[in-house]
Length: 418
Image 1: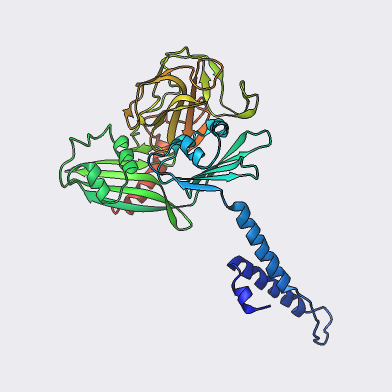
Image 2: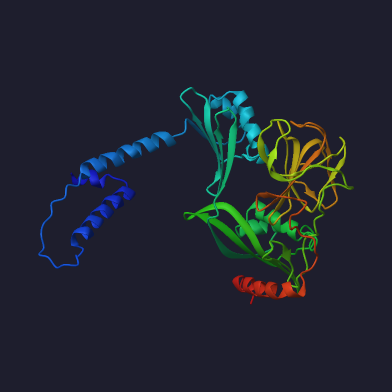
């Protein structure tokens, strides 16, 4: 076999050939219990055939994995337009939207994300992949009945901490941008400390601030996902600080919570629960078994929906099956969703406070009757809002303070404040 053919192989295949050679050599050299004279044993190893088979398997894998249409989302793209570009009909798009009801990933596509379509031999959509970043992808796969299943892929990666510090010159937003914080991180800090500080009025030129953040990396590449671990702002002789505890919530160095506690339900009074959180619910309309990632309240059309905690509205939109819905990001690791609304009373980017009316319940989307579908997510995962361990206390207990004090000390050292 020629040296050039071996050199042309991918690295994993070179390793396979090397391993085969080493195993063969070890077998020939391994001593038996009886000492015998060394002898040469002819062994036929068809390297040429092995290399050919490896190359053929590579070519087959490449053919199977190559999408029929790929596009990086740009401003102005619409979902229906993307399906037209991929030569996929609207009826198929509706089936994908139906499968997306529990994740609602298609509504969160933005410029820079990538969408990939795979078609079968008849031109029908076989698989659709949404690539948000190296840490998160969503894949829709056709099943035999013609509908689609959906899988959300989340890769943990490696998180690396780093400390940033700067001085106030101009607004806090511009000052934070100068040290490398992005818009989302700045907004998180402002929401976190809004009860302690008026960022537009209370800061002066020369005031100092420090931030400890953690960035996610996958295979050495930053994904864009980050987490704020600690913030301190020095205003003259006074200091405002916030440290993320092991429970994911923020407290000052005395263990006082910086976020007002959540209330369990997003309604001013109790309503009957018509359908509970259930990962294996039998759907009343489709008849299929699928997760029910929230709690349904039997609310008449027009019932006021209130924010269960402080946060920022991250999405207000309409969906063929979810109807009109609102999403609120509460900072840290918490997010809530409200589906089948008749009217949204907030807009994207708006700050909301606990108890504020954000929408009116309705009967939009595909449902059997008027109700509110309410979801509570922790770290991107839906949990039962009636049972989840959500922030309800305003201060850490004495027992909790011991571990928290150690954590604060470590983070202060990382920020150069010890």
